[in-house]
Image (cartoon, rainbow, N blue to C red; front, side):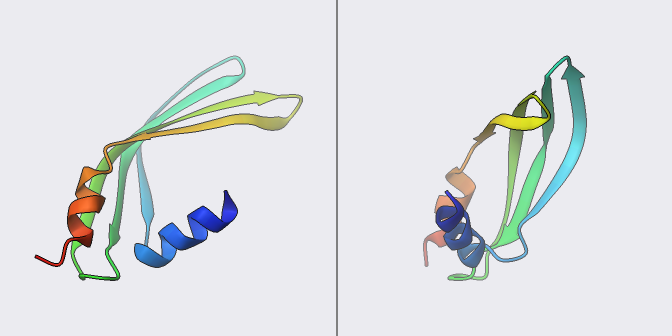
Length: 80
């Protein structure tokens, strides 16, 4: 998992998460916002809506899910 994120961050340096809303209840939290970065290969800017779901138990993160439309990132990798 860590190696996959390292590769992603090298492909899209300056990756940022802009949080627009957080909803939490009990041991769950949902985060809504957008991500942005620049594609290292093409120099194109990328901005994608995203949501994250966190589940915590015993003071530890038990589950972390990312929901995003990655089509803008795929298109940014295209040299055309």
